[in-house]
Image (tube, rainbow over the protein chains, first blue to last red):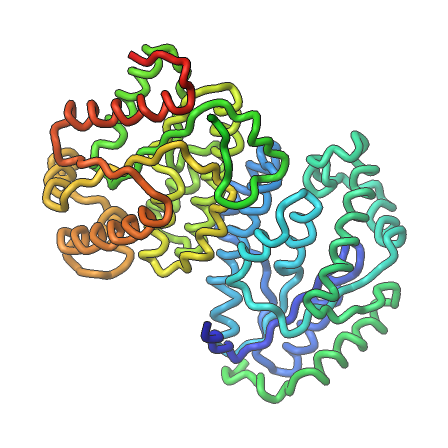
Amino acid sequence: MIRKKREPGVLIAVEGLDGSGKSTQIHLLHEWLYGLRLRVHFTEWNSSSLVRSATRRGKKKQLLTPTTFSLIHATDFADRYERQILPMLRGGYIVLCDRYIFTSFARDAVRGCDPDWVRKLYGFARIPDFTLYFRLPLETALGRILEGRPQLKYFEAGMDLGLSSDIYESFRLFQGRVMDQYEGLAGEFGFTILDATRNVHDQQQVVRSIIGDGIDLSDYRTRVPR
Amino acid sequence: MNTKRCFGSPTPGLDLSRLTGALIVVEGPDSSGRSTHIGLLAEWLEHAGYPVAQIGLKRSRLVGNELELAKQGNVLSPRTMSLFYATDFYDQLENTIVPSLRAGSVVLADRYVFTPMARDVVRGADPDWLASLYSKAIVPDAVFYLQVSDRALVDRTLASHSGLDYWESGMDLGLERDWFGSFIKYQRRVRAEFRKLQDRFGFDVINGNHSLPAVQADLKERVRRVLLALYPDHEIP
């Protein structure tokens, strides 16, 4: 099998539990790279309205099984990947993704899907050049999220797994299992592991130095005047 | 002996040993008479005392509507469409096919995984990726492929729809500007893919060029044999 010609762009993903601070960090990274006048794109997870409406109904009416949960998210991802991520990579952009295929690998495995099947399902997606994994002790992550007693959603809390009839308890158990999956994926896919207990500012310095050292930023200067 | 299996490993939580029904698939292009024959088979089987469940493409509660809309707007990439069809299929597999087979029904499928696979390969999808995608499907007890000549297919389509369908003509592929020419080319390509699938999965090919009653009689005879093999004690009229 001939290896596919690699697109000239750079793919950077952040992964981690809810409450690990990954979204804040990738937002700040985006601000920095944009300020440096680089070709950078933050994927905003705008899926097409058709895929979104099916996903929403499936979740609201609790119609999803582990298999269809996995497939509908793969459909949604494929849409974003082919319309946004891949063209941006072909065009030589630095593409930043808040969560990537590993989120699905972790969640689907917790729901009992065959891990090989899920990996093949996403076989069309490029493995990121950098996957920044924000690792946090489970209790800290849970504390950050559950502090304000938020409205948790059925699937978000893993209620479909029947771990507990209490939604907060279900969320705790579910997050614990997702974390175990992330730990395994970290080795398998060479994640860059970050200690997510650092404060936001210090953490951002670490993130910027990883990216600044890892790629030659001058290759990505924008060619379009801003 | 009625033992079901999947092409690969089953979906989470599925106990194959509890599936006592029969899964019978009819494949074939639009205007091959597929749906008419399935309707007649259903009537006949129910008459003979078999509970029947029917499935088909784009009929899932989960994504059926959205798939229909996507076809009208042509807004999704081929891979997104592949995955959307797969979602539609698995929703029906888990919510209709499996419960019906568990209840001992005869499930008549108006097309199964083979049509989306053939269409997607024609649109450039990797056959191995598709085989893996659909590997959790239950292997049918029989697959009948209604083969109809190009000429008969065009005649029937024009007569019943007063025109050709955009997707069934493969117009999204840009093969030809003229719909008639594109239809012929596209249907040939799909048939070539079906032939490969036939080698791989062993379909029964039915000559769909004969009259409707002749084709129906042929189908009934074959279905009867399938059911006798599954339920040797039954008497089927």
